[in-house]
Length: 418
Image (tube, rainbow, N blue to C red; front, side):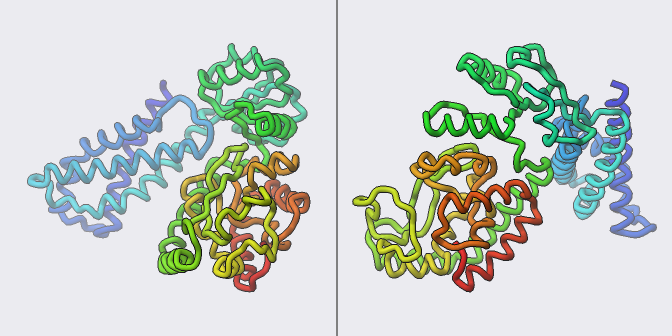
């Protein structure tokens, strides 16, 4: 309680220091009294607004699981507080009309930086930043999960022991779940505790394979292989959504032209929809421009595409050669089903047929491009693609994604790769 009260009081002080710094940046040392006077009359109300939003987003809670957890609360609290502060000044504009709106815009980034810097240091010193993980199984299997000093690990022998665990952030399973009763108990506990759960790679691949082949209902599969920090995962996702949106806007004239060309030259729909397997075995609908004749697999059933596939239409061959047919997958990226970079999503039929397609390559989101696409050929067999997919998952990072995207551009222009 003392820690939280101290944090609250210092944050009130920092909020007002933020506004004063904003005035300094806006006007210099000589504050115009007509503009500064509204702040002097409202700083108590403004401080209260920000503290309420901070409380709402958990800035003063007892424990944080990471620095990113601290930053998210402060960022959201400052953003909402700024919006409410502007609304407050606008409502009482008759009295405080001279309060400059630009001060709020300037104070926002300053406030986020100052308050996060202090809270991060203070919470670290007082031991309030600690991610609590409970591991079921052998300790030596989990050495690669997290070596951060801000992580507190506790080992238990059986799933039943989770009943007595409280205030935990994540459960790691490193032993086999042999019986359905154990799995059902684990599901019930996860719903009750509302925590993340991850499996060691061996258990993940075993359960995922059984889930897809036997159509079980394991919906909480995840593995620590390929996982990054919360901050980097957010950066990767934000980059995916932002880039996909901008590309779609930039290419909108081309998209309209392609839609018209397909409609005039082929029968049926413009877009081709197909079920694909995503992260952790999740089935989603992938979108592409239609490049094949209607009912292309009516006589053959599911078959892998080849470089000179006779089912491909004339306009489809151009779209495939230039990779324009892949553009609609940007909608899958925006919806969170895919990433710009990752293993290519395979069809359920082939995932069930090839065991290596339903293993660790499903630990991350599938992508539009990947290592296999920038280093190999279009008709590379699944058993050959897998080595590139595993290499990407092991080294997955924001910078690697940028590298793969940069390498993809000349490959597309030179009409090579996948």
